Image (tube, rainbow, N blue to C red; front, side, top):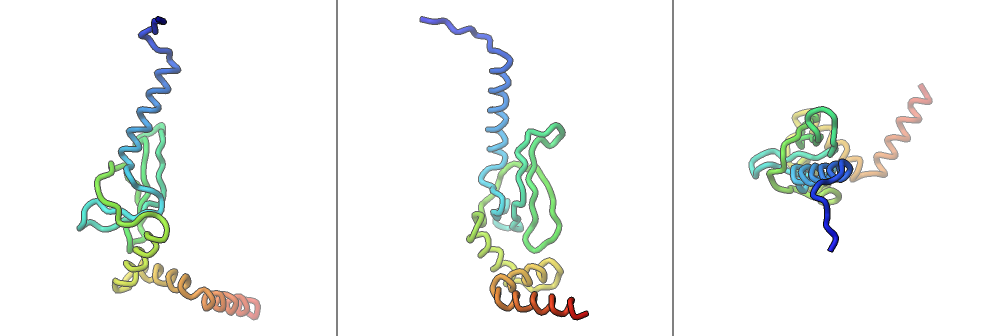
Length: 142
């Protein structure tokens, strides 16, 4: 039987340290994916994940997530570990959740007004295209 040395090479240690870091970051990120909607508790606001930078980075934090709370324009970055619930998976489910959110609240700020405008264009692509052609014609005439 071949005896293995108890000591490991620097390359092996580096490999296992990197694998350990990747597992740790995966636990911190949890089920969050870009485009998905999440919340910490049932009573907290829902936020959309815009980007995930898993790192490793040379400065602290070694990983971070970029998010925007639904109904707001402010984008923020954080590195809080996963602790919450999935409101909607990325894709059609998240789009439907976002549309319901934007249309069910009074549009009393710029963020919701802008979101409703985007929804209106998505729901009426022919009308939006006609307005774009009209605006282009008006610019050339001026």
